[in-house]
Amino acid sequence: MTTSRLPQPVIATGRAVIRGYGMLTAPLRRGPDFLLIGAKRGGSTSLYFALLEHPQVMPLFPSARLLPKDNHTKGVHYFDSHYSKGDVWYRSHFPATARRGGKVVGEGSPYYLFHPLAAERAGRDAPEAKILLVLRDPIERAFSHYRERRRQNAEELDTFEGALAAEDERLGGEHERIVTEPGYTSYAHEQQSYRAQGEYAPHLRRWMNHFAPEQFHVLAAEDFYADPQHTCDGVAEFLGLRPATLPPSVAKPWNAAPSSKLAEATRQSLATHYAPFNAELEGLLGRQLPWTRPGLAEHVSATRED
Image 1 (cartoon, rainbow, N blue to C red):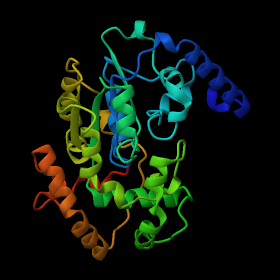
Image 2: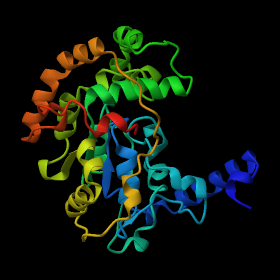
Image 3: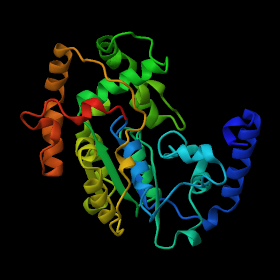
């Protein structure tokens, strides 16, 4: 019998037992070798599962043999939403150190980039971790984020433009509450920040305050989808792994959904808004980004819904 056919209470009990075992053995478990910190709807799921195809990259605990549905989990959301659960709980998600050998393991929680406390927490608790970041054209990212919320019946406003107009009011004071109220989590800050999450430069600067430059590897989703093997080779080198030929399936877009057309006026308004953030980001990275190159207004990112 497969896990998907088991009654939900049985599945929940199984997960609780395995997590409890992971916590009991937490002293034998090292934390992450890498953190994939975002961006939400930016390609992080596709990149993470592509990396799992590498023979030297391990999945989170438990493995598929113990609990198949958990193999679909890429992120723990410890440094954003679950920090109050503590380091023992966090380490319970990683394989035992003795089993790692020359392999690496990491997690991908795309809210980390935007969360105001995640960088500081990670810098304190996982200072040796390497930081991976995959970014997407912020206009496409914002529109994709909105459509995801609508598909999941989690966004009541029926136009993207209406959601953008409501964003400042929805987010008012939420950043400050997260910073000042221990344990506070904000749905609006994580899930209705369509425009704000694409203002990449200040979010990345916050992480750069806690990790050394050589600990970062930042890539564009457009480059990944155009040449996933080359992109994953670069990530493998960054992680200190040998090159590995990956299967064609690594180009599969996870969390895919049909695209829909964005109103041109909205696109232009967002382009104006993001222009200074894009310029600052390019200055930080020392390179031009795919979505700012002349003639590349339409690119592969527009058809990917990750």
